[in-house]
Image (tube, rainbow, N blue to C red):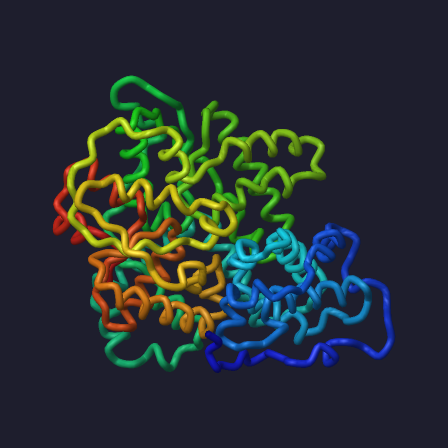
Length: 461
């Protein structure tokens, strides 16, 4: 169903984007969108109802099919890279739902990432836009800076200032992006540090590396702690190198190609030194990017082959546990769980059945399916920070669907989704905790009671 809303930058006429005469390609020669990927689209329209922005606005140029046409026009010199042209790509969540829906197998992910890299090199954004993006990338990809931000946020919350600001209506006076940043901030709880090495319980089955992430490492540390406990309980020695950097996913998805590639190299170096069998990831966006390191570094003679080997080692935590097979006893956890598919897990990585299988194996736990499961919640990397109105509309839509299920808790596989859904449910007045899937399995393995487990979740507001 198309919701009758209007994208402020939307245009319905392709002709408005085209100059009078044909020119050379609008893209530069460094990794432009590949013609063979563009030509794979047969414009059938199966992607339309899978696309969140098309559902909201019903605009052809804000659909995957329309965006591919815009890429084709720029490639063939039929349109320059104008602010209006760029607006349609900025509005894209990069959720990859179109890839699941596409019968022709169009790799939209590679097209959108290549196009965004071109935009960041060739398009002159406004000063305010550049500053905002630089702030996001300079903070949210640096765990040590996020650690400082977490301390400031904790003081803001414990002092009662947050309650005062929210109840006074001051947030309505702030720019939308700052208000969105405040609304998404999680409740800061005691930090749980994951040791560099967690020994396996019982006979060791594997030695695995654990990606700690950036925001998750500092703001939702209980997810990493739960992941390490589950892996150790299932017989894995867990290595979580303290020096591991950001994996580069936020930068890659936003078009910052060179910076993302450098972080990919650093990540490979760190985990190669750790000598692990598998690299386990509990953040869907990070996992989808790390599985693409071989493509990202395809031109790097020092890293191309190493990156391909590394990517083959990367697995989502649910994917890994399902393949490993259970060894530890699951204790009852009588809960109705609404499972939210993270887009970069279900669409980019194709991991759908494994989380449901893991949850379904917990005695007493029932999994409730959320309607419109393929549609993004609006988190999408930095999307809810740079496109807050659209992100909030999608979050509220998802929140209403979740609330209709009467579930006790929501589970998802990505930290961004966790924060986005928590904020959306808070806006709707629904006090439903949102947790990572692995936290439910951890609670079952530890024999926690639902009341004590849910009361400790830091993301609940």
